[in-house]
Amino acid sequence: MWIAEGFICGKQGYSQFEAGESYFNELINRSMIQPKYEIHDMRILSFRVHDMVLDLINALSSEENFITKLNDLSHTSPSEKVRRLCLQNGNGGTHGATVNMQQVRSVVAFSTNSNQIPSLPRFKVVRVLCLEDVDLSHGYNLNYIGKLVHLRCLRLRSTNIVQLPEEIGNLQFLQMLDISNNEVPTLPSTIVQLRQLKCLYIDKVNITMSNQIGGLTSLEELSGICIEDSLTIEELGNLIELRMLDMVYFSEREYMLVECLRKLQNIKNLSISFNALRGDLDGWVGPQSLRSLRVDGYCFFKLPFWINHLHVQNLSFLEISMEELQQEDLEILGRLPDLRDLNMWLADLNYKSIYNRREFVVSAGSFLRLVHCKLRGHYERVVFWQGAMPRLTKLELHISRVVWSSWTGIPDLGFENLSSLLDLHVNLSGGDSGNPCEEKARAALRNMAEIHPNHPSISVGWW
Image 1 (cartoon, rainbow, N blue to C red):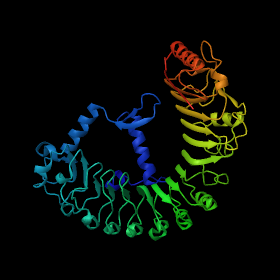
Image 2 (image 1 turned 90 degrees about the vertical axis):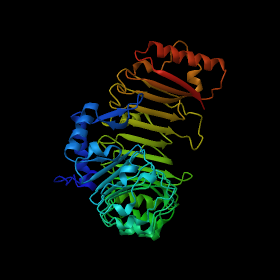
Image 3 (image 1 turned 60 degrees about the vertical axis):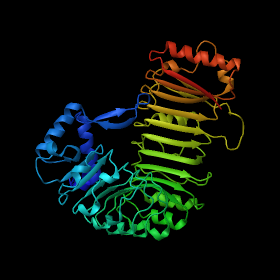
Image 4 (image 1 turned 45 degrees about the horizontal axis):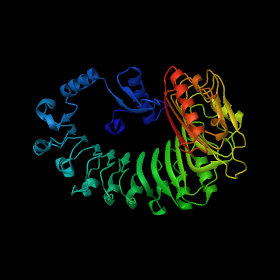
């Protein structure tokens, strides 16, 4: 939205997005914007500003005629010229009919009904139109959208629309389109005309060759695409500027996916969901820019050789499944300098044995920045040494019956060494409710929580 408003011109050597991220991070570092964390795993859910900063923003906005609020027009707009319009709490309907919209550049709605939003023909020079969470299914007409030729940012997330008008192709300056969380089965063919589009957020939309998505060479973020044919995956390989890709893959031509991913060397955030365990990614080497990797529905044979602290120094989120994990692999993961969220499933696709007696040790000084960890699947146990995972707040483990059935007193896995632990979920293999050994295991976990300095919450399941 900052880019669409023209607030960011870019820095030398940086794209507009990178420059915007640096400005945003600077505001965070100065405590003008504050992260809001999830209470247990300390992941950032959203951002806020302090009440005093909000008061200052409101005062300056009114003084500079920066934003007009339709629910309190007489106090927030000292000028008759409305440049940025904020519709709040559904109270702007009576004012909207009399406000001059000819110079409105930005429209953002909060908690508003569609019948209180001025009709699109009233906006002549609007650049930003954000109607997220507004129900547009009851007669609000989007057909005029193609006449808003100055539009840069269009957000229609969760608006209950079922289609986009063909006129969307007239928006030659559009940079961001968000229609996610709607039942829109396909995109209009005119989408290929949006040559300046940088961000496209859809929701499990099947893009076919007729859309020629490969022509959208300015795309940097693409989310929610479903791919079923080889021609589309070939087109996807043309989007070499992509920084974020979230896709569902149905095609059986896995080699084409690898060839496509090899071309996307700017990818920072990659999420792929495979259909019915199809796919072959073992020949792919992730780019050094990778920050987040999520692969669902596919099992690597072993930890990819390129996942190490020398190649992907900025990797902070990792979610994968593997058939084999060695102790040295765990140590390699533990040396990733920025890893904060780890979700691993250890599969046993060949059913070679129930656990292969796989035992792992998390040594001191490893996983220094990890906050959230899930280690699940076919292994016997994991032992945590003192000084391991010093920032870990949330942990989920699978533990074999041969281990938990022998617990007395407290578990011998070193949970007490996890100094920041707040939330522990344990899945006991072969367990069932009412089993005496299981009750002893639960008691052992409760004993651990009582002596742990943080008294973490404990939940127990079985599989």
